[in-house]
Amino acid sequence: MAKVRAMELILDPEKFDEHQAIFIAEMVKKIKIKLQEAGLKEEDVPTLTANIAFSIASIIDDTSAVEHDDVEGRPYLTFRTEDDRLIHCGENAYTYEHVFGVLRSLFDE
Image (tube, rainbow, N blue to C red; front, top):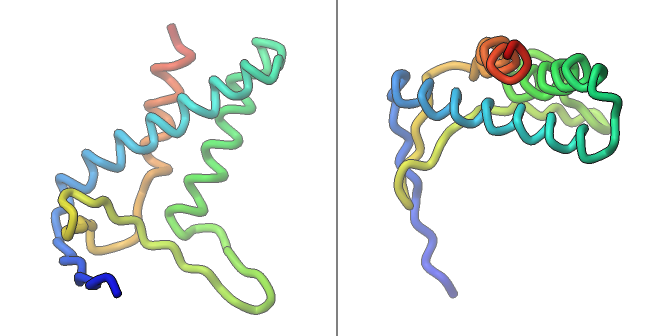
């Protein structure tokens, strides 16, 4: 049987924000690419990208209810920095706040 190691949970709000910004930027870029690959009209891509990104961010940030069969899911975002270390910010994520800047950089060229 494989040995199970405990993960160390480290409070590091600055590093967490750095990782969360990278994470949300990559997510929004992938949404845009997939919508373009699906053949959506180019003028529809910004709005749909924003709608999907904000919806996903609100779930990650635990601002939207996630429930099924009376079981509530409460996400708490962490990032692995080493094999046995996770960083967190001490509260719910705030990926939603990063979506605006990513959308501007992708579509306000």
